[in-house]
Length: 346
Image (cartoon, rainbow, N blue to C red; front, side, top):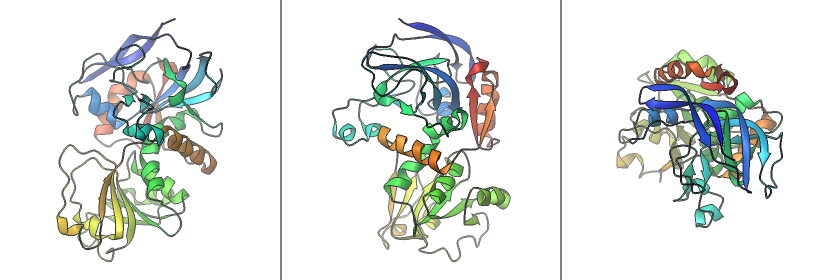
């Protein structure tokens, strides 16, 4: 049967407040999850503040969900009550298209996002993880290994897979040089994962203020881009550069630092057009690519990898009543490095 639960919902573009929502009754393929922790992602803020598109309020956001299975449908074979599980940015897809068949459900035209999308099972608008409980089809639930603490696992379900997927796709590893632009919520996880994959890692940031942290996270080198001579000696150095920042920055200098057939992968989502000139691409067959999270199989691979290598995001656990303040701090870049909501405080 359906269940009324506590949640924190956006009631306007500037306010998240205590609320209640009703979750649908689990069907035979569903997993019911008691949520323990929910990460705060910058995408949540963009959505709540209607910066990407207009939304209807109230809406519960959150797509970094970590919890424990409380019930399963009769046809569920992948999970049992008591399992530690996660839910990321999507909760369904068509399962028939080429993308779905290839395990790239995130590129399905009918992919159903964890919040603010139409749930094909009951026609309601999906509501996210800032809540006590969620019901999700078993095909979109992930196993969280025992060696990953649930609070630290939550941000991996968006931030972690967002950087792991391009590093995996473009084969970061021994003998490869990876640059990471930005050492924020995405960038710091990208540094840790790239280093664990065996790559040589360089961090690009505006000033030297984060150099010590970058080195602690495993960076081999650090470039303060505010220095006029920052890019001297970097021509044709990198195989892959991840741009994790959402600000408008000139990219030509980064492109000139890529080797032949190198890739600049855009991970951050600035609202303004990218700044490039064609002759930054032509001489070395450089590519600029986009990427969107990862499929379910790849996300599970990421979680298993992070558990094995003990890769954790840097987090600050907060109560639900602190969400609005947390949003303001994220926008001002005053968090090191991800906020995670303790759902027991609801």
